[in-house]
Length: 410
Image (cartoon, rainbow, N blue to C red; front, side, top):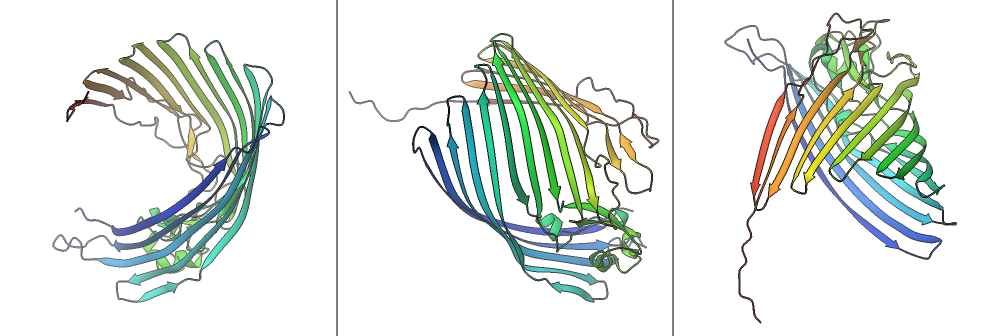
C-alpha cells in the first residue's frame, strides 16, 4: 500500500538592499570601496507526520503529529576595502566588515494527534562580529607571482537548521531553534605561473571552524529536550529510537592543496586540469556528538579532480570532453560504534558540442559516457560497487531573427 509519511508546507520571503561607493584616491592607495547591505528573511514551516495505515480503506487516516517553526532573520553589513601598491611588484588588499545578525519572531511547536500542543515562542537572539581580511600578491617576475591571505568570517544558521523538521523514523532530522553562528578563521598561500600558453596555480588553504553547525545522531536515553519533544519522549518512540539533530557542539578543521593547470596548445586546442585533495575533520566535540575526532567527515571526499579537453576548429564550432573524478568517502561513521561505512570513487564523463551559423545556434551533450563502476576500497559495506548517475543526453537549438522598424533619414 502506498501512502505518504510526511506532508509539509514551506513559505519563504526575502528582501534586501545594498549601497556601494568606490573611488581612486591616488597611485599608492589606488582603490577605495565602502558599502552597506541589508537582508531580511522570514519563514513559516508546517510539517505533518503519518503512521503506517492499518486498512486500505483509510490509507491516509493515521495522523501522528505535526510540527511548526517560524522566524525572521535580519542581516546588516557595513564594510570597507582599500587596495594599495607600495612598490611596483607588490599589491595589498585590506578590508574589514562589521556584521550584525538577528533572529526574532521565533516559535517552534509540536501538535499530537489528540490535539495537545507543546513548545511555543522562543526568545530573540543575535550576534555582532568584526571580520577583517588581508591579502597580498608579489610579482617575482613577469610569469611568476606569489600570493597569501588571512581572513575571518562567520556563517549564520539557515532556516532549514532552525525551523524545519523532516523525515520519518530513524531518518528524521530535527531543527534546533537555539543554533548560533559558526566562526571561520582562514589562511591560504599560493603561487601562479603564466607563460607560453601555460597557466599554473597552486594554493594551500586551512580553515579553523569554531561552533560548527552540523548534525549528530541523538539516541534514546541521552537525547536533547527538543529531540524528545518532537520524537514523543525520552525513548524517542515516534523516531524509531534515534534522530539527527543540529548542534554547535563541535569545532573542525579543513585543509588541502588546490592545483590547476591550463595548457593552450593552439588557438583550437586547450587542456584544463584541476585537483584538490582535502582533509576535513572534527577537532572538538561534546559528549553527545557521536562523530569521531580526526576522521574525515562523512559525505566529504578526500580527492576531487577534473580533466577537460576543448577543441574549437573555428569560431562557430566547439567540442568539449570532461572527466570529473570524486574520490572515496565515508557514508556513515556513527550508526555502528567502531564501524565506518565507505563508498568508492567514481568518474562522470561529459561530452558536449555547440555550433552556430546565423541565424541558428545548436548544442548537443551527453553525460556519464563510458562510466565504469569502481570497486570499493577499504569498505565495510557488503555492496561491491558504487552506482553513478544514469547515462543522459540532451540537445538544444535556437533561431535568431532581426527586424528593423522605421525608416532611415538621410
